[in-house]
Structures are given as C-alpha cells and as structure tokens.
Image 1 (cartoon, one colour):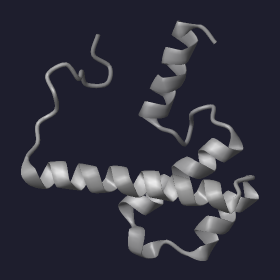
Image 2 (spheres, helix red, strand yellow):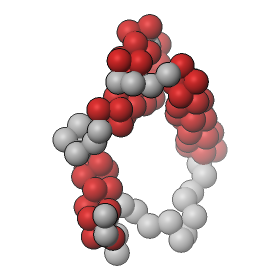
Image 3 (cartoon, helix red, strand yellow):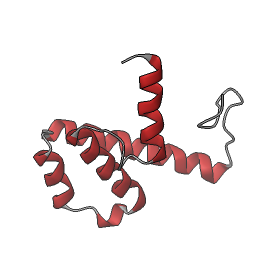
Image 4 (cartoon, helix red, strand yellow):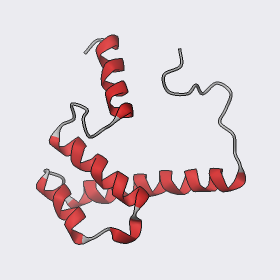
Length: 95
C-alpha cells in the first residue's frame, strides 16, 4: 500500500468506519470500541462473543478493552480539565 492508498484508507475509517474496507476482525473491534465508548453500561457477554466469533482470543479481547478504556479515561480527564490540543496536532482533513 503506497502513501496515497494508506491516506485514503485512513480517511475512509475517519469518515465512517462502518463503510470503510475493514477486515471482519477490525470491523468487530470498531463496533466493540464504539459501544464501550458510547454505552458502557450496555456491554454484555454478547459483545465479547462477537469478538470471539470474529477470531479474537480472550487475551486480545482483554488487551483491546484495556486500550479502549484507557483512551476513554484520558479523553474524559482532558475534557473535564479543559486541556487544549497541542498546536502541532492538526484537525483531520487539514493539510
């Protein structure tokens, strides 16, 4: 994959991961991450089972959950404290 293809792939994911050309595993992980982020109280064993059905084993599911939870935590802390993004970080789509 060249740089232009990689940029197009990342752009497709940023626009809407549901329609991006993701593998079954990556699609399942994105769905899991979105639900854990937006509706954590609604998580169930079924969510974990969908990841297993996509081919992930329990250690990978645990690791993904830890990473998703960590980023959710850090973002909430930053939002609560009014942390501004670094000046060198550009918004998606900016050149």
